[in-house]
Length: 382
Image 1 (cartoon, one colour):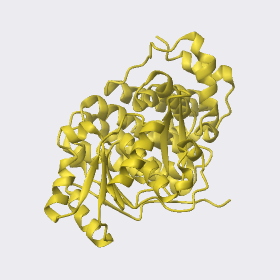
Image 2 (image 1 turned 30 degrees about the vertical axis):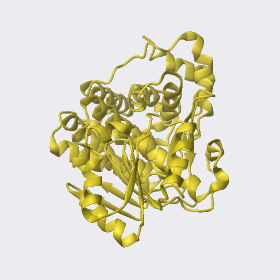
Image 3 (image 1 turned 45 degrees about the horizontal axis):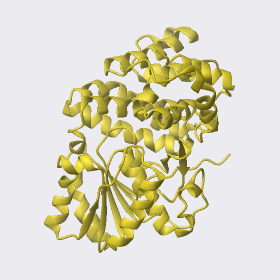
């Protein structure tokens, strides 16, 4: 079997990393930059931390901020037209998953205009050209979109999310500066952090997992377990640890895929507008319980990485349960809810089938029936 790893060409990490951006732009010879960021980041001056550096360096740019949470097909189409109108030749995307997913789709379509029908990008699209060169600057510690080859678009007409996987969409540069994440509110820090933990755990247990990605995922689990509580309380050390942990998780899962947790979470976001990280966190103990019989010793490894004391001496089932309890405890400690009262019994057939049709589901280590998925959703019902 041949395994593949795709990462950024260059990444910068640490406090003050955004200071590197003008130098990147100048070395690349970009003439005009399309700065893609969401309106709240513009409003509260987070985007300006980067654009002020561009101004100081005399770099020409235009800001595009028509970014919506869970970006839609229409959102992407509008962004493509805005990029063309701006006469830009490069992208700096600043934000969380929504900004980065929008920028990825824009960059791919500009470089591959035959895929202007956004739906044609679903799955593994046979694009020929790399996306417009992009510098990705995350403001959340969770999605790791700056280092992945995935992006997710919402189809409002069909009430579904679809995943696009394309080796041509990865940003050329990632700039991971924990100072850009300092303004995240507690709730967003918690939900995006639990999304990162889900990436690491599902990446470690997915069918495609192998030695190199295992190394990434176990270290990411350790870093997130040690730092998420501190990050939620805006401790600088916690912020820095989460910035690194979520990035390392992305290095892994982007190359091996995810599983049923993400498949079900995408469905909850599409049908009920549930924040993605919250959906992932609520479903994580449920999906781990479902996969327990095939995860075997891998759950012990997860518990060890999460700091469960004495786990190596426990019988396997006890160790597995201890690992799942550690996940539940972290989720509770950072304020993630346990139930979602929007789910109705009459919705279950549709949302379960949508989860089984999701691009993340085939990576799950255990096959699931429609009834089993419905039962997992029922565990979230108030």
